[in-house]
Image 1 (cartoon, rainbow, N blue to C red):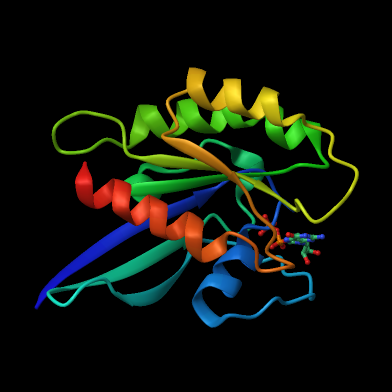
Image 2: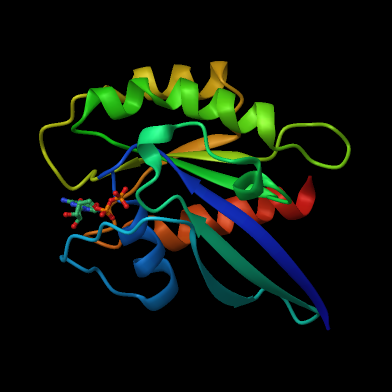
Length: 174
Ligand code: GDP
C-alpha cells in the first residue's frame, strides 16, 4: 500500500466559509457557530484512493489570520495544493482572490519550480443574491492559473468532496 501525505492550504478572505469547509469535509458536519481562532490549524482526512493507494489529506486553515493576506512562509512550506475560496454574495472577497493567488505563487512552489495546483471555490452558492457572475469567475480562473473552479455550498454539502477529489487528482498527476 502506497501512502501519500498531501499538505493542502485553504486560503481566502474571512467569513467566506473556510473553517466550515474543513469541518464539513473532515467530519461531515456544518457548524453554525461562529469561530474566530487565531493561528494556524490543520485537520487530517484519510482517503482510500485505490486498491494500492491511500491519501492522507492535511488541510491547513488560515484561521483568523486572513486580514494579513500575506501569510508566513511556514504556512506555505511544503504545500502541494491549495483551495482558494470566496463568497459569491461578497464581490470584495472575489476581487481579493488575485492578491491571494499572487501571494501563494510567490511563496509556494513545487520542487520543480512550477506553481502548486490551486482550485477556485465559489462558496455559498445556495444563496440567491450572487454578486459575482459565473462568466466573470470563469475568465478570472483561466487568466490566473487555476486548473478549474467550482460552485460549492458547505451549507448544503454541495461539491465539497468533489472539489477535494479534483484537487487530489490534479496533485497526484502533477
Ligand atoms: P471563514 O472565516 O472563512 O473560516 O468562514 P466560516 O467557516 O467561519 O463561515 C462564515 C459564515 O458563513 C458562517 O456563519 C457559516 O455558517 C457561513 N457559511 C459557510 N459556508 C456557507 C454556505 O455554503 N452557505 C451559507 N449560506 N453560509 C455558509
